[in-house]
Length: 195
Image (cartoon, rainbow, N blue to C red):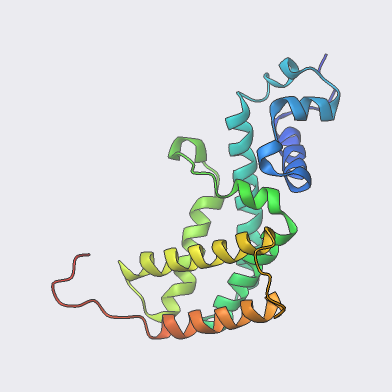
C-alpha cells in the first residue's frame, strides 16, 4: 500500500533532495521507493519511469534556479547584472549539485509542457545580454558562450578540477570581468560571413 500523502510533487522533491545528497545518476524509482519504504510498483501510479522522474527534477530545479537568478538581476544592468546572474547561477549549482546536474538533461518540448523554468532561462539570459546592445545571432552566440563558461567552471569546481592554490573565487571574479569586457567589445561579423 502506498504511504499516505505520496504524489508526484512529493516524490519529485524527495528525488531532488536525493540528487543533491548522492548524485542525479543514483536517483532511481527503486531508490525513491526504498526512501519511502514502499514497493517500486507503488510509485508508478505517480511516475511513468525513471526518465519521467528525472525530467520532473530538472523542471523543478530549473524553476528554482531561474527564481533565484531573476531576484538577483532585478534592477541591474550591464556588468552588475552579469555578475549577479553568474553568481546566482553558480551558487545554486554549488548548493544543489544534483539538481543542477538535472538541469543539464536535454528535454523534449513535450516534456517541458507548461513549466516556466526553461523559457525563463532564455528570457533572463537575453534580457541581461541586451544591455550590451547585442542582437541576433549574436545574442544566441553570447548566451551559448556564457552557459558553456559557467557550466564548465562549475563542473570543474564541483569535481575538484582546480588544483592551483589561487582561490577559486578570485578566478571566478576575474573570469566575469573578462566576460564583461568581451561582451562590451563583441566582435562584428565580417561581410559575407555565414550566419
